[in-house]
Length: 256
Ligand code: ZN
Ligand code: FE
Image 1 (cartoon, protein in one colour):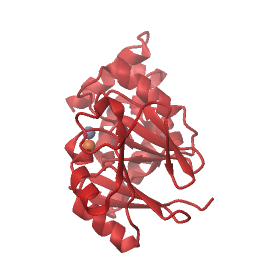
Image 2 (cartoon, rainbow, N blue to C red):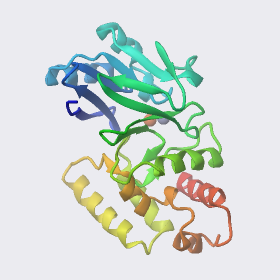
Image 3 (cartoon, helix red, strand yellow):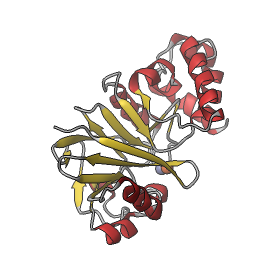
Image 4 (cartoon, rainbow, N blue to C red):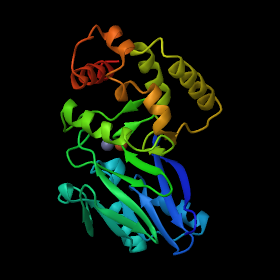
């Protein structure tokens, strides 16, 4: 099986577009469609033809280019069955545990409600890569527009079960502001301090902080660590349930 090639590029200011290409079959998938023109230009520059679109959720900065990109390329659109009424052009509806294929590469669908009620992620176990949309960010997580803290905590817990070395492709470059917030709830975490410093340097050089890894996020991302004694002490929530600590961290971030 040939190795997948990934092309990552900025769209709409702070979104990332991703193209994944399987040289063996010639198939290329666009993860979401933040900007149809930009995505097509990137595919052309790589010499790739887009054959599929894999949507994570219905927001315009993720599915807004579906119709234009499908019209231009004939790509087949894969999206969550739960949001078939809100995501234009879905050809293939998927739900938790379903498998999507790019050539011989399989991606497993993980249902991750919270940011929206139908959000899904795509995990490719052989390549150990995950496209997580607006569920998990480097040092952060998506806002709870349609789900409860308990739902989001369950969704993030499932992503945390992926192998530590999994490369995590988040849909936005939010890491530097996330780091500033994370340090307020977990100030004594040395791994977090080092990560925040690295992120500051990367952004100063104009570099992307995405992808991250599951292992790095488990060590530093407060939204994956509500059980941590240091965070609980900082929040004065020593005996609370994980989902209540998670909810408090999310509430504070909303007001940060
Ligand atoms: Zn979103
Ligand atoms: Fe988004």
